[in-house]
Length: 428
Image (tube, rainbow, N blue to C red; front, top):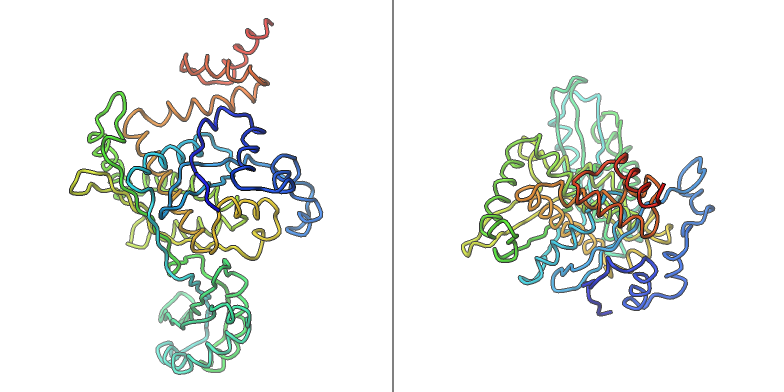
């Protein structure tokens, strides 16, 4: 299906008009459009089967980020998020990226790790070699637990042994099963394999197995994105494009060297990634855990992105990080809107989804850095935040825009100010 990710005038349309446009663009059926048009897309009986003690369903806005061009393909990006400016910033940065070809992405094989902790050992070095000597037997046993994965081209690929000769609890060996999980996130698969091989590992080493669980530091399952933007596309009314580039690189360098800044910098990246992960029914907590652990891989907590200037003076941004996402299993299959989000994205593999996610994260990071390095974060963000304030004090319909315009013009975005403006509008 050939679509355009440009959304001309989209923000000026009503939600119903936006949905009509999307239905035409993607040839959605009336039933599919109905999931978005009507409240309650997730039936209570399905929600009750997803988690325990269900008492209801909690809704968040589902928006659409436009302008994304990824590896030459137009991509519409569904984002579930409550924070203003995320969708707008990602869309605008994607627009700036288009003249140079948009985002270019790649990813590694979808490899996940399962950890098997072995304690009660006097000879951890010897235990390591014993396990490696039986590597093929262990791998075959692990693969016997998921024949479907084997048929799909996945399965346990390797055995990696980590030794801890002097932990506070004595010598410890941790065996890693390295598993190609194909289009699944893979938690259930690798956990099952870890439990299956545990008795054999105890027999081989003479130790006792404790934990048998996946690692969310998916450092073998990386997704990458690159973007290049010419100076003229970064010019503002107050700043030359070349100056904006230098300011962005200074801001990035701050995050690269200072963990206090890096935490907020990376949170901004995840502002783009998490909403896509939620929209597609994936585990955003696993993605967050892996991202922040990976940010510490060089011995200190730093930036997940890099920003540089190439020989032509263009701004060049890159990101590489773990991205354990799937298209099968869990809420990606049970939640109707997760399935619809995947259809909107048009991705065919988990690796494609991972690559879209990091492209959105890179775009969101650029949006934050550009704002911080020039006008400051509050000007654009507060203009959008003002809508939430107006709604929270009871403004509806045309009242919302009127209250927002007055608050922004006065540079005074507060609930009590909004209440006063609303009373004045209503003549109270």
